Image (cartoon, rainbow, N blue to C red; front, side):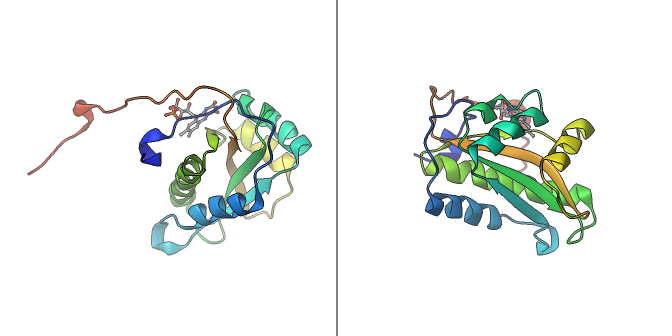
Length: 165
Ligand SMILES: Cc1cc2nc3c(=O)[nH]c(=O)nc-3n(C[C@H](O)[C@H](O)[C@H](O)COP(=O)(O)O)c2cc1C
């Protein structure tokens, strides 16, 4: 079973902690992502404290998965490493997808919770944790053991492919 094909967003989780070695695997996957000029302009805030995860829920009206998640990863861009926020975003998105796939491959569910470019959400994330001035929080990943049926979607679309042979 290819975890890329099997991944889907999970928004309800069981109240089980994530093992430390699994957190390490998630971060290793993140750090394995490609990045423009190999600048690796990311920073990850790993939130294991359940009360803090629940508090983080308020950063966005669409962050419901943080009501039951047992791990949250706040993905941030380090603008000192790459001053181009456009490139930082692309690199951080690649790292985020790696985390989602790694989570799936280990039996966890996850959901990407959008922040940037919504200024209100970014401000709330900045209030959640004091970060250096050059580090911009972008979005959050909710992770945990699934407590809902998977909804794996078939998104294949011939109309979105141009083939040149
Ligand atoms: C940039 C981005 C932001 C997202 N923000 C949210 C969000 O705030 N809340 C949420 O429940 N899901 C969010 N999602 C998950 C999408 O809703 C989900 O990926 C999409 O519906 C496709 O479903 P799938 O992930 O199960 O394939 C986001 C996904 C991306 C890529």
